[in-house]
Length: 244
Image (tube, rainbow, N blue to C red; front, top):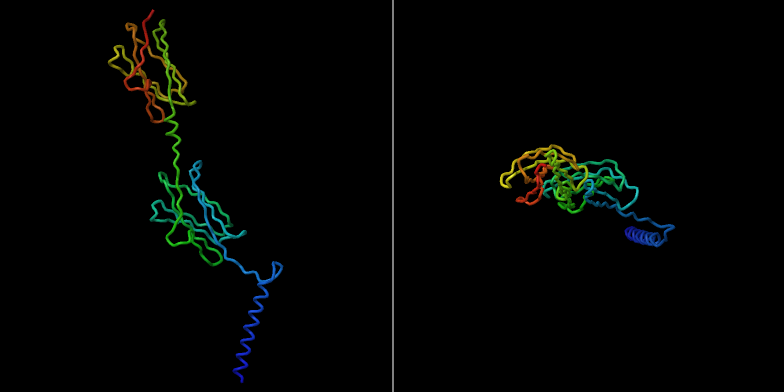
């Protein structure tokens, strides 16, 4: 008889628990049991071509979340990941900047978030990682490709001096100027070297008074790049240098 009473008591307890659970779960927002949902974490990354840095943003699925720590692991070969940063007691969302190594085209990373005595891996799958493409913008080379030069020569028959006026397509350009001259249009000699000439600028060359024709071309060195004027390698400019 005692065993029957025990089983009856257990059955009544199960019924009461089930009924109570149904009652609370059926209540509206003004009451009832609030069933907590787990906090999740994510990250987004983008390369900033203006600063040359990778901006990584860590987010949480809830507001006012403070992570115990965030560890960032970075790789450039998808094989060896190195812990580059550790952040402690940080509020989310969190923005961090990572400066990639020079010459690299991609950055790979994953992170480990510690929160409420638990660790969360981003991305979640073991061995997985995020990829950020690094877009290299070589402004110096682009400017060099666009840089052009012009030169005008003016012979003063009274003094026998040829005045060269040079300009560049970009303001505030400084260049080294090499003048190559010839009187027979066959043998050219480097006769003038004007170092660190601010453009627009001028320099002079005294022609041989016994000659009537001068042939010349220029080599212009700027930012370790050499340009030729005229641009074609076999061209030159001819001016009359006959004195009065």
